[in-house]
Amino acid sequence: MRTVAELKERWIAEISAIVLPTCMYVSTAREAEVLCGQLVEDVCFLEEVDSDFVDADRQGHGSTGVSGAFERVFGAGTRSAAGVVSVYARHFHRLGYLAIDRAVDWGPLAEKARAGLGDLRRSELEELYGEPSLVVDGRVGCYVSAEGWLYVDYQGPELLGPQELVRDVRVPAGSGFQLGGRSGGERSALGSFDDGVCWTPYGRTLVGGGL
Image (cartoon, rainbow, N blue to C red; front, side, top):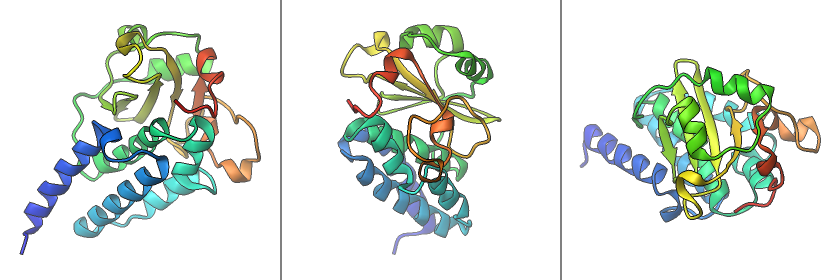
């Protein structure tokens, strides 16, 4: 029989693998939510931690949950899957199952997002605000500090690498921070997800388009 330590070690390795090459494990947002949701519930059970914070996060993304919020805004496919994994990465880190490379003060980037973002490339953003603490699937830069998490969504690694354009900057749903505004629909259906997204002009042209 496996020991608790062996099980924990296996899950840490599995979570790290899912976060880095997400596209090798899941291809849709729904698949990502099922996989990560089960893992986080298992980890909470093993660590004897109440998982209410996970349920609250799902509700913060609206009535369709985390995967539904991303598919509505980013479209179906791998991009939405990476977005969902980035949400769960925050939970795995909180539970001690996902390490980050560095802490980054993302306050200046959040202030810039509130003031309005112009089009900029990933390399330009990182030159101004630093490299992210963690990158999910080469598509989502995660900036982590004592204040919480902030995400930057890129075009995608298969396109231009460091020269790829930034699509948006977002904060976790229900975090208390507000960067952007709703892109359409009713408040009751969308929760607080849309209020935490600030689009670049380029990103706004792709809302709902995936890729």
